[in-house]
Image 1 (cartoon, each protein chain N blue to C red):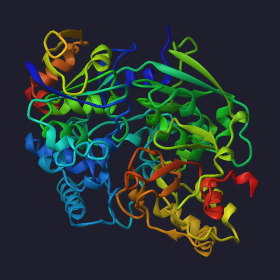
Image 2: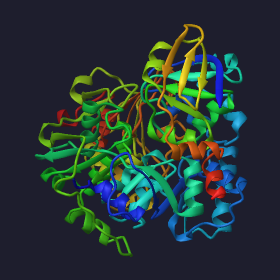
Image 3: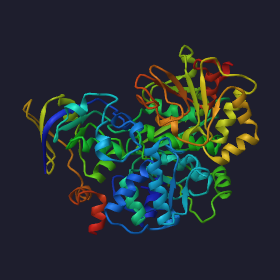
Image 4: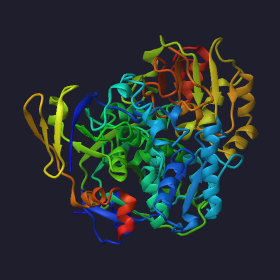
Length: 419
Length: 161
């Protein structure tokens, strides 16, 4: 019996010829990540336990993105703690205000993640890098502390669900619609503890940005990771950015999957997840009676340049509906500059949107767009849990940038193809 | 190792945003976090919880964010053990890593009601419901995880080696 992509990467990291699902292993790590919320807890543990050095200062990334630029004094204290630690241990990849971006957009952009890597991050959306053929997964702060100290982590080798993608996306349908469609099909615990492996001829139809978005939300189906087969598009993206050697892993032909699910990309409509779980999906066209107060376009899920392009194309020359606020957040400084150059930022501002420096802020109800009592938001973020973006009576509908932009223009949830 | 206390019961898909809302993540102080534990779904929890109590959830308990603040808040609020039908994997990992006992047991998750008094023997995985006079068998931990718990958390277990 052969191994899946994930199993092969984990076996290599553990120095083993073969691993089987359920096996507990210890692997070497290519990169350990933390942000301004999770890193302070890791530092506290690291220091409390008397560790006095990091395993490799070039293999740790700290990205100040959640409550940064600091939203209040306590957040400022936390960032300061990270900054001091990074300075003390001379961490190469410490990103603060001015050069930071949203971590899961920033790391691939900086070439810090390559195919075949094993990455842990004290952030649940660390699974994003599976899009590049890496094994990457979210962990907690204690795992981060242990990873920083030893360069290793323990894992239970996961079973895998294979998603066999076929067909072509319809116009105005993107990666976000694909992943919401899949979560709607399998549920928020449909891939619990498992690995989601995306393969098939349909993969070639998805841009790297689409894949990053799909892998990003693997966690919303409970998955340990969501990984794409490496193809020419991946290599074109990676070779432009990664300045070191890496290894590509392919699943064996006789790899065993717990389940194989066929997805015809051509059947997917603009999809929206209704409150309060990402599995509550409906077609955007069925929700035209839902009035919105706010639209958010950004986040580690959908703050990339193709996302801003999709939104700008819809908003060009138009103005958002009266009574609606629309917040646009490019995920990194590079994306921000590209968006300025392409004229997207002008389009957004002329349409009445607020544009912000990169931050996770509104996605987790941190700051920069908190919802009031009974308010409704359509957001390109990843979670619509109760109270996630503000007051516990507020409601979040998750959607693609195209749907969010179209909805901002009309004031109700809108299928962008109907404009 | 045992636990013995009153049950606080919640449903399926209890996410880390309701366990500890992100608006309180500007601190890592355990007692501060405990003050807001569960407040978005149960404002009474922090007032009614007593040291040594037990939390019971349904499927996919702890889904969502990787914030270790969630198991920290639960532990610091006085809860000694969480029982659920299933756990989200990061929450599961985090709980073990910080030394919060958690048990997967679908039968216990279904049959235990809010307010029941429950006794747990971690070595055998036996959960005894004193209120109902019922007994449920949870999956005991694999040895690897037992070692981490015995060492009182992941970092201690690394240091011991």
